[in-house]
Length: 230
Length: 288
Image (tube, rainbow over all chains, first blue to last red; front, top):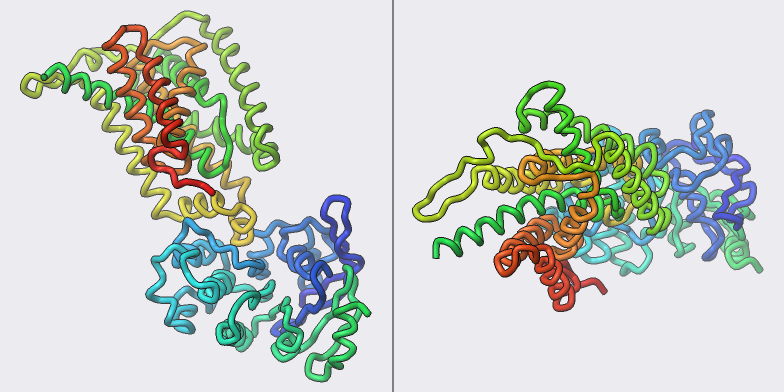
């Protein structure tokens, strides 16, 4: 169980999150919904260790893990797929995943398993990672996080700028991870898609949780209201 | 004809030593985006350490590499972990200022401990031996330095392109923030990297001390040659730095042929012209 308790996050003097409290159970998919600048990316970065936060504001199985480094969070099973894919240009597709796999945890996910799910990536392995199409890069970026074998996979805008067909591919990969019992925290601009792909949703507005519930029975109107803040 | 060939070979072999100076600088600039202004002084420090090791143990100069290289690795590691990690990635100017201060400190400590006298590392008859190929004769020591330089560049190339350490280095150079997300502990990694850089510097230092007399204030000029080699070759290109070193060495030897004192002047001239014609360096990609 990953529990976030009255989490405050700051960028210098600017406060981006105010007392956010929510929890993510093992194996469940939670969608974070909110407009630009609401604090979704900040929340994911706080969990992944990329942002210094109070130790007791992030609890993993009851243990305070806030303010750890990215490497420590990775070894505890929290991995982030950053917004904009951010593949390493000087590394090949294979090396991008190989680097992560070496630093990550042992487990069912390997480069081979990512390739089995997406055989189309196989002939591209020795290409520079950024020479791929946007959709292929996104699959590699998710693969790079998967091969670390996290228990909690944090996905930041994984469908941004991709064609609908490619978005389906991306969610197919996430569905395989979900079937393995991986918990996923999803930041997704497409609210409809976010609700379809998740068990629960959490709406964030100006750094605060304003609405949460079960995705299947979500009131679209209330979610839209929480999204636009009207 | 044989004279010209000999001249060219001598230029290239001197250049191979400059390339060795440049290797450490190239790595720290390419990966850590940090310019170590004390790089030349560390070369001189390494040479003095070798001198001290020789007089303590009585071993020959090249055997003392076995002591100097690990010692320099430790110095590099400690320096990065204890001092430079505090300033790296904050602002471009901070590492410059810190290492400039280090340069002043090292020069003065060397002056205090070893006096300002010029000295060199005795290498026995190695310095006198030569190879004769037809009409051309090549000094054994410069040839050895050239071979070590090529081997070290090849080894570093393999390290960077084939190993986990190298993949981490390239990832950090590309995008340090994302590198942390895939578990690269930048500070620990930088310390290791700085240790490696300084170990290479130590090796270059012993070869330098055997080949050329040195004094506590010789550092800045070594830094200049190394820096010119790196920039000439193109930032971020390992073999570019090697080629840059060769060009600088060649220019010096040919320049000295014109007038004995003008060797370094000619290498600086070549550097300036190359910078005007190809600012991104010989092997550097043009940046937009």
